Length: 103
Image (cartoon, rainbow, N blue to C red; front, side, top):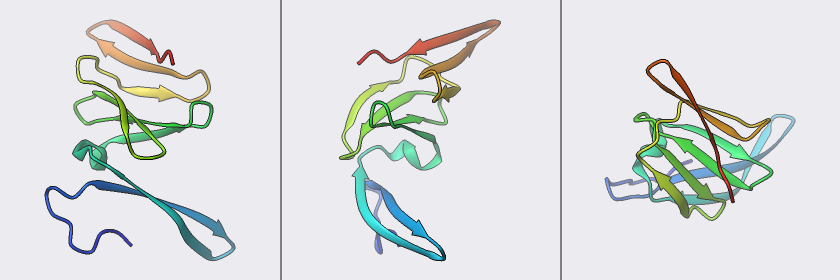
């Protein structure tokens, strides 16, 4: 149910569905102008109402529910996100790096 004729310049999309029984109905679609998201790890924070996107290059992008990239940092290397404590983890040689997003 994606874009029928995507080009290299077509924004990526996130589709939202409501699921009940055997039925899934799309109720919202947002476009994100960040080509890295297709092969990224994507997390959603209910508390902050934001998507956290960790690219294959381990950079961090944050997107709003409107699809706007509100933050992007390609200089930090993030491996994982923990939604219980809101922390990002990275590894640099023998050091574990802990990042906290301050709104």
